[in-house]
Image (cartoon, rainbow, N blue to C red; front, side, top):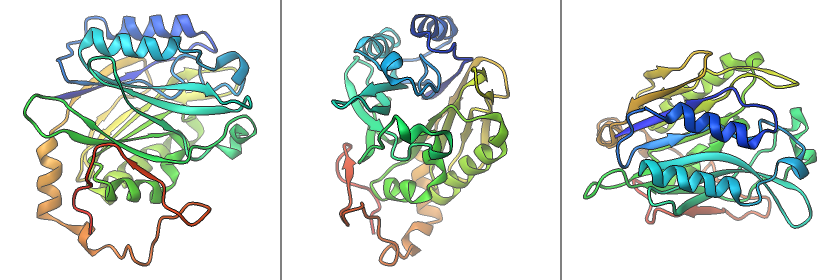
Amino acid sequence: MRAHLVQTDIVWEDKPENRRRAASMLHGVEIDAGDLIVLPEMFDTGFSLNVDQTHDEGDGARWLSDLARSHKACVVGGLTVRDEIGMGRNRALCVGHNGETLAQYEKLHPFSYGREGERFVGGERIVVFPWKYAEGAPPLLVQPTVCYDLRFPELYRAGRRAGAELILVIANWPSARTSHWRALLVARAIENQAYVIGVNRCGSDPHLAYDGASMVVGPRGETLCDAGESEGVHSVAIDAPSVRAWREEFPAWRDARTDLLPHQGRDGRVRLDTIAGTPRDTP
């Protein structure tokens, strides 16, 4: 199966144009049933803090669902949603090939340096969901995350403990820190012996420039794709058995001292949605 990374120059706060652009970019791409399509964080608005203007009223979610059905593929894309008190949630919506919602993950770490926390509330749950890429094959367990989350390795350790085999990072990661982006994607892959797919935007918005640099990193830390700075769809083969084989050959996770490194919420309780079911390889 393959993952298709949609690296686009997002038009500021223009939902119809950004959806049109993404659909146009995917037109003509060879996408097989069961493949994975990944769009950036806030793919149809850009990284805007104007929650009243940019929040999704259901049309963005329907568009992602229609996209999944049209390609018979799993789709992940970023949207802004608004809660009952008017605060934003930075969501990664994960949709199955029949258009059904597989998971909704909300960014745990609002980007305080960029003042995201003034208009957005962080999520409360870690999510792992099954990517059913082929009939009869065991699904690949996927952990979706968003942008600034990438700087917090404990989030990915918790996902690994829940069985995550592929990590997704959708982003609007600025060019000033592209070197961090590349290094952290590789680090998360090596630490967790997992595939890592990072999908970033390119171009610019009224405030920042973006280098793109969407990447796929294999479970041994090898770079399988670096998309560079331009718009485009980059398709990369994902070999699910290779993750499991590498973990069996080099079982570093079994040596982790998880007893000394608890993953707790602010109230002392772990919050973990293992939508996929029973975790794998949990000590």
